[in-house]
Figure: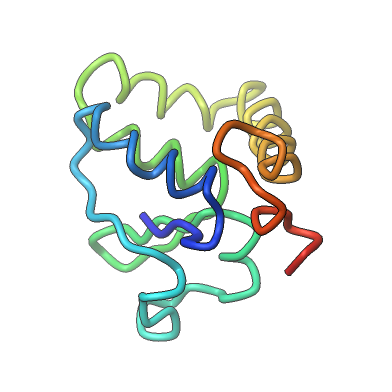
Length: 117
């Protein structure tokens, strides 16, 4: 899981993710070798990337769903549900709303704003 170290909301959220019991490694977009991981740098600044152990990369709500699928029940089920129809479209919209408004959410600052990038 790669989060934006310049965004307080993203950093705070990334710190909470291990509490879900998921089996992932965490790093920041700024400290990772994105090219070596196959991560699109521009996309990573607006959608959280998750690099699977096999090298596949997912972004946004699909990244979060993949992270949940590494955890225990009920999180695995929630992760699967997030990528099924019609929930996939709703999860995508919810993720994009959060990303667009992350500067206004708890822990967010002006530096979190996607427009400021």
